[in-house]
Image (cartoon, rainbow, N blue to C red; front, side, top):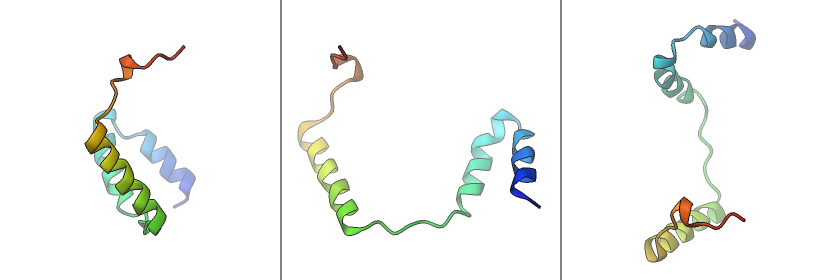
Length: 63
């Protein structure tokens, strides 16, 4: 089976089942191990959010 055939089959899946199909497909994609600097960045971001919270989207002046 080709990737093109698989794409066509996916298009036949009802919208209500797309999430289930996504969860099945994602299990076949190898997970990459994060680099130490990526882990540090995640940790820093989580610490900052815990200390400072977040800003609501509507509170940002986009102009």
